Length: 117
Image (cartoon, rainbow, N blue to C red):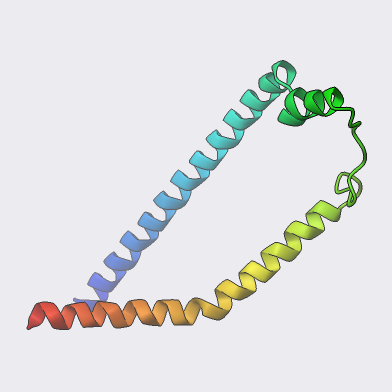
């Protein structure tokens, strides 16, 4: 009897996990498709803020555009910066994960004790 309940729970859990995964996958695909459609049509109509506003006022005041000090448009420097930031953020989240989850468990136990009393 116990093994049947365990199998049923496992199957329900697997089905729930698969459903959630499918839903997230469909939402992600829809988001990517919409983003591609709207950005391709919007890029032709609208210029960026730098082009339409900043450059206009800079030219009015006699300041010409110049190259940035650190040019991230060339090569993979921007990807490296994002990789580095993700690594640091992942390390920090992993380092403090146990603290965060233990505090949540302690708060749940504390609430249960209060409600029982």
